Amino acid sequence: LTTTAFLRQRQAAMVKFLKPGKVVLMLQGRYAGKKAVVVKNYDDGTSGRAYGHALVVGLSKYPRRVKRKDSKEKQAKDKRLKCFVKMTNYNHLMPTRYTLDVDLKGVVTPDVLDNATKKVEAQKKAKKLLEERFESGKNRWFYQRLPF
Image (cartoon, rainbow, N blue to C red; front, side):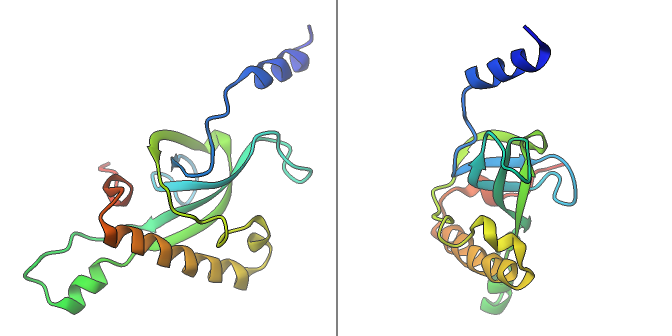
């Protein structure tokens, strides 16, 4: 068995765990240490990227802690967050046990990354969906900054 044949056989046997909705940690680059959600996964790669990769939406800026004594304007400002949309190699993602059930598939698609204006619009829509989820109080862990 050649090395490449062995690796292909091993890849086929591996369990596919990076499914849409899975929360992952970014390990490399500008957003290292930030949390993200897998929107679409490409286990076998594509013609442009011959390796396993995923389209992810993550938080580049986390919401701050809200205090009751603060004014409504300050509370609204502290609840804001900032998103990023990115195509990322599996080697640069660390999966967690958590999932986030926010429907980002309709908002963020792979063709969004081709055009800068489309990407900004997708980020704004994703931000709105994630802020609504934050307001509901579910998935608290996703919205907390990693302490390091």
